[in-house]
Length: 260
Image (cartoon, rainbow, N blue to C red; front, top):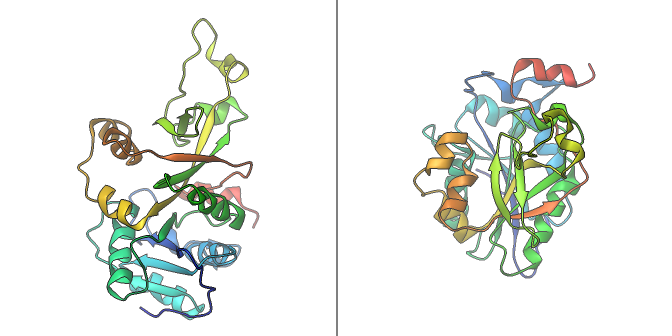
């Protein structure tokens, strides 16, 4: 691992972005290196995140030397991690421990977990999730956006979120929540403001260490959404509203979303 010193230092706490990435993917093997407009996807994600103002560092956390080579040859920073991780949060946690051991992080700093399959992530999205930590009671933050189509509402690959009046997430689900009683499903979107979860997380260093070691909860196992384990164990997830959409890549056909 190499650490660059070109990032500005924040007086109160550091903000470090970690992009967990693996080569093996059940639905899209080698996804991290798929070309997006001629550039490997993981490289595009890194370059987009590095544009964010006030970040103190950006690292790709991976167990794959092919991914590491792409990032290092483009001037990026890599942290090599175990191949045994089953989630991006777990991989981020190991990378965090490595940074802590090297005295690059402190216990009061913030880790931003950016998914490696978001090649067009907007730096403003990263900035928005960072702003949540101006409030000292926020330990986990993420982003949500209003859903504007029934197609997206009923797409199980689009995770929906319900938040309270204080922007705290109450539930995440692959199904629309709430169901509108007495209305045809195609009309639900006209009777409620539904929110799409943007899979970008930020955590305080201490909190990341705690949630990475939780056992999977019943809701997490049912929906395959790890943030449900956090909520079931009493952790608040602050949801920042964004107007910027996110375009992820889950399967090879998703590459068709992008212009050649």
